[in-house]
Picture 1: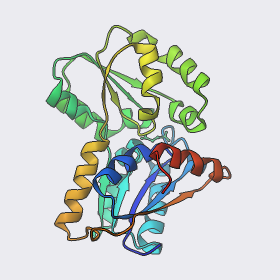
Picture 2: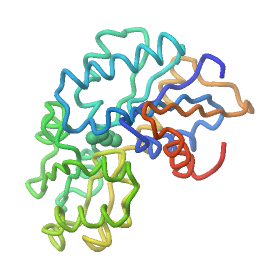
Picture 3: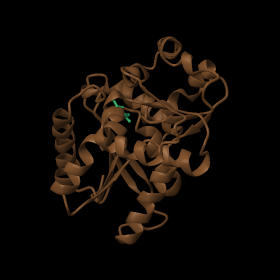
Picture 4: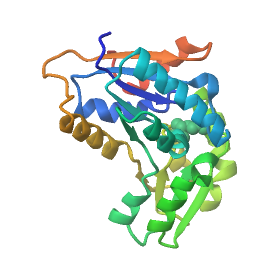
Length: 254
Ligand code: DGL
């Protein structure tokens, strides 16, 4: 693996949903995906803990692996650490995902909306600013404590039980669902099983466009016709299973 990679991280394999969108636009890049599943879930951790964890990941991706740009493919990590990281590491760009609540405002204003995200994201100052700016008074906020962890483990029955216990009350009440955690696009089918037909809002396609724009602007795009590579790193003991699921989510063997 050469230097000059795009570094991307999440508290587990959920961020693969973000990487998948980036690859569609940037198929000639080298990627290092850092799945920090040892520390999953991030959603219940304090700001200080998250900042510390993210700082160490960035040190590794930037200083040891010389990544040219870093994508924070975790809403919780973005909400709590991106300001700190941008202040500390001024010579690298951070592209950070956030719940696609502005998209609701832009494309589906005045429609009942459920924002699903971790407790950490929903309680963060960054999300509060976004919410207050675009709030249409028809929005329900649902901190889905523990859901990312259940998705990370991949047990469909447990996922359905969680959703039935925690979001069934919104059935018939909402038309839009903001997938405010990068693990949640993996359970769209299950969410529709519980809520019926809803329109999903996910920030990943927009983020991918932004990654491309930043690389172009900084003259850091990889040359065409170069073969893509993806290196998967996981911090837990189950890294082998994680790796299999990660590439399964990406949908192809790279
Ligand atoms: N994928 C992370 C996010 O977007 C999950 C957070 C967690 O580990 O709780 O928020």
